[in-house]
Length: 328
Image 1 (cartoon, rainbow, N blue to C red):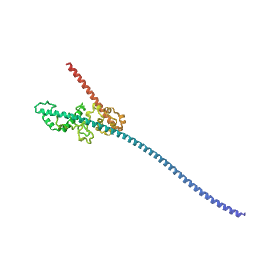
Image 2 (tube, rainbow, N blue to C red):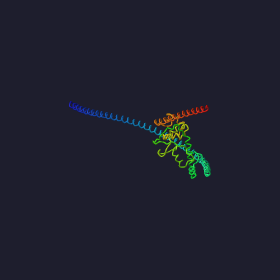
Image 3 (cartoon, rainbow, N blue to C red):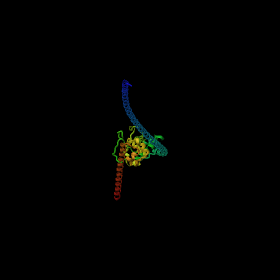
Image 4 (cartoon, rainbow, N blue to C red):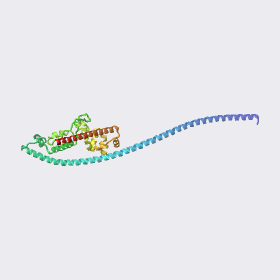
C-alpha cells in the first residue's frame, strides 16, 4: 500500500471515530435525561406510596370508628329494649293494682252508700217529729233539703270525693304555718282546706276538690291549682312511694329521669340515700341535674331533722306539763 492510501484510510478512520464520539455524546445525553426522568418517576412513586399508606390508615381508622359506633348503638338498643320491657311490666302491674283498687272502692262505696241512705232516711223521718240536732256535725234544714234532692249517683260521687280528700289530708303534715311557697309558674299555691263533711251540700263538696294533691300528666300548670310539694317534704318522704318520687321529679323539671327512677324503684327512703355516685350509676350523667337532686335531698333531710327536733320538743313539753299536773 502506498502512502496516499494509508492517509486516506486514516482520514476515514478519524472521521468514523469523530462520528462515533458524537454518537457516544448523544447517548450520554440520552442516558442523563433518562436518569433524570427515572429519578422524577421514583419520587412520584414514593409520594404515591405515602398517599396510599395514609389512605389505608385513614380507612382503618374510619372502619374502627364505625365498628365502635355500631357497637354503641347495639348496646343502647339493648338497654332501651330492656327499659321498655320493664316499663311495660310496671304499667301492667299498676293497671292491675288500679283495677283491684277500683273494685275494692266500688264494694266499699256500695256498702257505705246503703248505710248512708238508711241514715238519711231516718233523719228525714225524724224531722217531722221536731227533734233537735246537735251543732257541728248534724244536718241543718237547708242541707237536708239539698241531700234529699240528690239522686243515688250524686250521693255516691260525694262519698268518694270526701274519702279521697280525707285520706290525702291525713297523709299531709304541715309543721310551719308561716311557710308559703309558689308554683313554678309564679302563681301562689293555695293551701288545702279541711276535709268536706258528708253534711255539706253537693256543690260545696265540688269546690273543695279544686285543690288536688296529685294532678298527673297536666300540660299546663295554669289549668288547675296544685298543692305545693314543699309542704309535705318532711317526715312523709320516708313513706313516699315510687310514684311520689317521680312526681317530685316532674315538679323539679326533671321528668326525663322518671324511667330511671322507676326502674331502680326509688322510694322516699332510697331517695334520701342518693349521692353523686349512685345518681351516676343510675344513668344521670348531667352534672347540673345531679347537683339539683343532691340539693333537694339535703333540703329534705334538713326539714326532717327540724321536724324531729320539734316533735321531741313537743314531747318533752307534754311530759313536763303532765308531771306538773300530777304534782298539782
